[in-house]
Length: 115
Length: 110
Image 1 (cartoon, chains in turn red, green):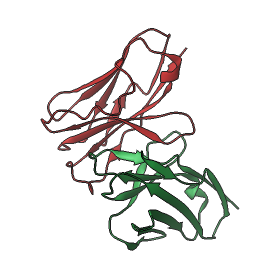
Image 2: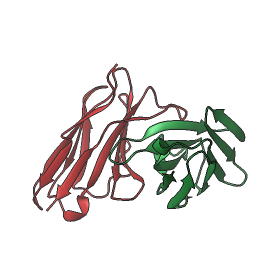
Image 3: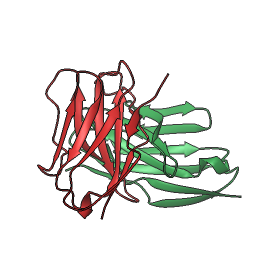
C-alpha cells in the first residue's frame, strides 16, 4: 500500500511569504506528526494529532506556525511570514495509533528554502 | 530538559562490526527507537526497545539499559549500503512524539 506522501517535495519562497505544506498519512493511521530537520541535525518535533483529540502543539516554535488535520486524513502545516531560519526539511509521520510502541512511518519530506 | 546524545560521525570498514551509542536524559521514558536515514530520504524504522536487554533483528541489534539511560545499535557484517545516518529517539511519555538525537553519520569504507 501507499506510504506517507508529502507535497510539494521542494518549495522555494521569499522571506515574508506564507507557505502551506501538505501531508497524506497512511490510510487507517490515527496519529500524525510533523517534525522539522535542519541541515545536518536531528528531527525536531513540531505538532501531533491523535484522532479527534486536541492536537499537541507544544513543539511549534512560534505563532507563525500552525497546522490542521481533517479527520484522520490530510494535514497541512502553514508557516506565515516565513523567515530564513525556517529553511529546513519538514517531515510528516503517521502511526497506527497513539501507543508509544507504534512505529512512526515517515514521508519523504518537503525541503523548504526561504530566500 | 530533554537531552539525547550520540556521536556525530563514525567510520567503519565493509564486513566489520560497528556500535553506535546513545545516551539520554529525559523527564520520562516510554521506549527508545532507532531509525536509519539515507541522505535525502525519509527515516525508516530499525528497532524499538522498552525493556532492558538486547533485541536482535538480522544484522542489526539494539540494546537498552534504562538504569543507565543508555542504548546502542550494533551493525554486523557491514555493507556499503549501510552508509547512512542513524537516529536515536526517545518517547518521553509526555506525549507520543519522539525526541531525537542529532544522528550519527556512518560511513562504510571498502
